[in-house]
Length: 301
Ligand code: AMP
Image 1 (cartoon, rainbow, N blue to C red):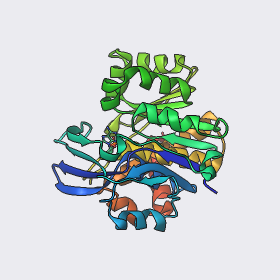
Image 2 (image 1 turned 90 degrees about the horizontal axis):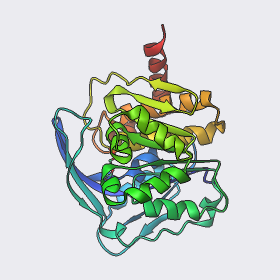
Image 3 (image 1 turned 180 degrees about the vertical axis):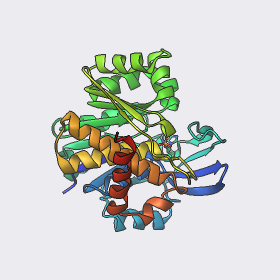
């Protein structure tokens, strides 16, 4: 039984960082978030791939126990993203985005997904995010969403509707400023909360993450990564792992949300230690728990 549903892009990424490059490697928000969520809970992916999508990637998802009945196969080319990073790894530079089969994609949720209580609307067009939410049999217990500058520039009003419709909106600091047109991330978070979001979480890359509620705020540290190779997907891993952890534990208290943020940060840091999903493939829940323990030690005083 699928506990967490993850929607987003399934991509072939070509990426250059100061530490190397990959050509057409497995990527996409749903790939990262779905994989990260599946460390904790049975996860199903909603997305689309083209006829050129390598079978070995499907095999990887299946080996991890990810449900693929929500993945569509279309004639045409898989979504492609081409980007690079300079020494400031917080800043991804997009060279090219080819939506390909995503341009015409009309998701249809399998019945087995519609009753899931946890939904992660990963980075993809905001219309698609709303469409998927509308297909759930009843309002899930928790809906988390993520977005990026590409969609804020293209469809700002619809992104604001997504903020309104979900419980937790994730932004990185630049996206929060851009969407709410303010230089202050605290003001941006307040504006997200005013739009009926219960929590606003601002990811600050290598500087950690902040969670705002109407009454409090929580600051999660960043893991001091020495061997960072490629930060692509770290934000998706953060959101996916957080959602999977909450689906596993079931509690939505602020205390448990704080824990979920640390689990999300642990998986994000492990993702950044390799290109594509290479490092995630090598790790188990034990490695994640060990990193969570290190997080605990970092902030204890
Ligand atoms: P992140 O580093 O967490 O922001 O996510 C990077 C992933 O997002 C890459 O694997 C890309 O394939 C995917 N991506 C890039 N641009 C877009 C877009 N416009 N819509 C959906 N996914 C995207």
